[in-house]
Image (cartoon, rainbow, N blue to C red):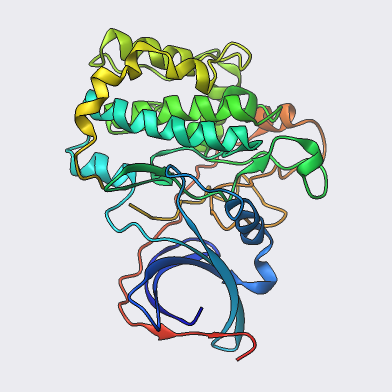
Length: 339
């Protein structure tokens, strides 16, 4: 495909996402790009996304390698959804989404999770910023942290723990495991984000203390009081600290909070879609290979001791979000590597 790169939607420590359009049609899509020599994780994302098709997953459109400014770039092409992320929509709604709409989005997120879990894939970074919204509702995006659950599908053995600390399940914060139950915990945190308009954890001073709190305090995020009893009960099933007791996608579908009668009035509404994610300050976490999703594939800096000890020993250095927007509007024609 011959295409032209447009303005940058956003960028983090390495990868950038741009609007792009075909040179021979009106097709507009999103391109996530990184230098070829640093594209290991983006290539992994491409491999996973290319095997998925669902109305609840952002659509994969292909990949290529181009030469730009004397650098070879690996480009992952995806569906472009222009209205913003779920986090953007929360802000547009004044910092809080009505419960009926929360139920509608939650059901669609669950439908996306049901699909990828059936394929043996855990997303590992569910949060408002990774949910894109369009006319048909919500779609899962950003599979940079995703991993195969079946060890036989993995390349190179066990994969590192990754994701965004604020949405991590206790077993993930302890470095023990990261699978489908962790996606359910993150869904619960995302519902709180929709209902409260902010962090699922309050009074957090830095990522180190947050991870320790998630891993060892015995606490779960506070459920917003303004929610109905059904919504609160649904959240309680998502936020059980023991991953074995957490409800599965199939069980959650049967919960009264997601009854069709409560949600069918949302079907005809127009919905709103994508920014890349943030990065946790590398003074606390260090990647052996930096992930293109910016705040995932985080690994323990120390090679001594267990992950459990590493979380316990984390210092009190504060983390920062390293994210900025690029308002540059020019279009750049790119050429394939063999041109």
